[in-house]
Amino acid sequence: MKIVGVAACITGVAHTYMAQEAIEQECKKRGYDVKVETQGGMGIENELSEDEIAEADVVILAIAIGIEGVERFEDKEDAGLVISLNPAEVVRDPAAIIDRAEKLAS
Image 1 (cartoon, rainbow, N blue to C red):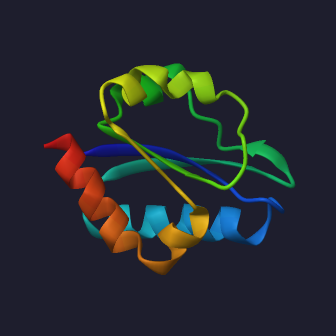
Image 2 (cartoon, helix red, strand yellow):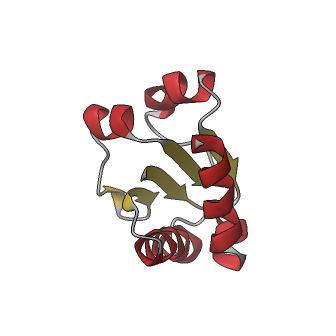
């Protein structure tokens, strides 16, 4: 399975990167291909390409603020393949979020 995501919190520091790490670590445990873009105090890092988004089985938007380029995910949203939640939820229980992603992708 291939998962892409965006992490962004209000201050653009701690929870942004904690959510990114939580998603990446849980996906790696399960052998999934993963890439998480961050939008925070350092601007956009690890930016997702249109191809990466198109090839993804599921998109995780761990965001607590509006993000740049949200329209990139409209096709996945229309297909019901986007999980949107607060970054703190991902940090608390990344396994549950990836479980949800598996159910969406199946």
